[in-house]
Amino acid sequence: MIHDNILNLSDESTENDENKVNKIKNCQNITENKKFLELHDKLLKKRVLNVLVVGCGGIGCELVKILHNQKYFKYTLIDYDSVDITNLNRQFYFSKNSVGKPKSLVMGRKMKCKFYNKKIEDCDSFKFWKSFNVVFNCLDNNKARSYVNKRCFLFDIPLIDGGSAGWFGQSYLFAGGFECFDCLPIKTQKTFPICTVKNKPTTFEHCLAWGQFVYDENMQQDSEIINEIENIMDLYNKEFTIKRKKYYTENIKNTGYTHFCITKYKDTLNLDKNNFIYSLAFLRAIKHKIEPKLFIDATTFINNIIPSICTTNAIIAASMVKSLFNVKNYFLAENLLEVKPQYKNQECTTCKMPGYICKFNRKMCLNDIYNRYNYDKIVYNNEEILLKNNETSLIDFNHIFCVIFRKSYVANIYFEFTNTNRLTLEIKRLK
Image (tube, rainbow, N blue to C red):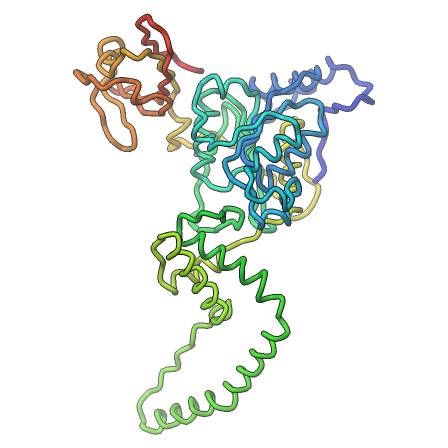
């Protein structure tokens, strides 16, 4: 991947800032939107950008390493996970002494930066999100990604999202005027990153992933013994099983009836291996009071377990930072796909509607919105709530996104409590 660095941030550059800005303005690319022109202008003038890094896993570690070596970023980390022994082979900021400790705590102290040991869903305040110039998403599940995307879109913050799955990975840049993360189609094929397996599993899939790890760490060390056992089993099948099958097949053909040849399904994983992993997962599920799945369903999840590779994570992290630095990218290598910015998906529930923020104090209720702004109803968690004569306090909706209706007008609305003694109820458009 070779980038055309229109933005050269090194001290050796001989081109003045005014010429660089002119180049930016002449580029017909994603940075035509106002928000990214402002970001690039800050980079050119060597101002510090406030950056939020969501997730301190495989990609997050590589991303922080890059940001730490740049003088243009003041970054904040947030992650709720703890360091597991399985992380040490690809997340190099952690050691054996870090196992069991919060990832954000370990990295934050090493990097001497601000950090939060909490779920991203617990960071809801308008003030928190507006304090950042750009957000780097390093999460491994679409639900949390969508949560961050909604905040970034509503508060007009550029979002750079990265992800990896084995040898594959992607980096997306989302900014105002183009598609958002929720515009993208969600893949129906289910994969299961091994890095999501923690000490306290909540689903049977977590137990299967743990069983896969135990097998890889222990059984594969005795691969020669296992191969010898498999050779003996193959010899047994050739000497006995096949002869019996041939005898019964010949008897069926001699009767004169048509014989249907049925192809036996051959599992891509060894049956004994699947049995071993399933047994481990079953015992772990019972221990943590999780309902086990059937063996046939479990083998599907075992086949979908994918590793996290440090080299892939490093490439994706570098691509994420590059997409912020560069105005225009040229890809001059094979097997790399250029992802061009697309227009909004008209069916997207996040960016097809305008966004509003409702600030209120403790005395306000839903009926006050109806009386003052003539809105009819809101929808939250697919439940329709009428506003007229509804005395439900707005404090119950603090830091919550809803869809609000007024006749044929529909919009997203975000509720935020304001601690003041005077009566406060204000709804204003964010952008």
